[in-house]
Length: 216
View 1 (tube, rainbow, N blue to C red):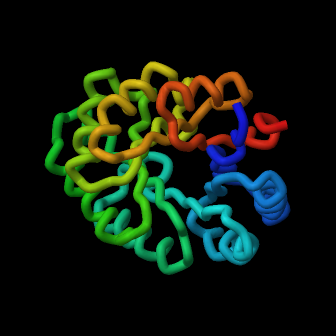
View 2: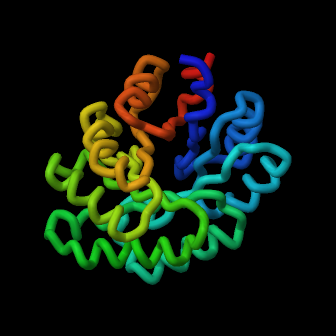
């Protein structure tokens, strides 16, 4: 498959990432013309400056990694990220809300963040490792109702989690595609073969820290 680089959101969300690590990430994204970089909110301005003369998108995460922040905190976080120059925002869903079938809460949680995002795309991280197939489908349906732009598989932070699974990506794609939403596969995508499987299953973009390995 050609142009794999255009699917990749080159990711560095490690707690102990240094400025040197971030600068390396930005350089690699520029060199390989990746779709974007995905970094923690504190570094959005730094990323924006480093990537200003390129097409590489600056993606950041909200309510990360647990999704259990209060709605107004998530919305405020998103508004700050947008002001700092984020091109796209990946928020973590309230997993407890899905488990408890508290769907109105989950819907309003996403909706508030989408309002804060305005015109910039919002991806909703479902954390598929923690959900049943029925819960994945329901979470997708709520994301549609709340006005999100993407659904995303995983944070990559679940202990002993698999991350993106082909069948989950396919289910997500089949649920949201006719409503105009896209799918981001993320978590455990470490080689070219897996990357291509995810794209064939319906992924529009790939969150991975192995972007360089995949394209080389």
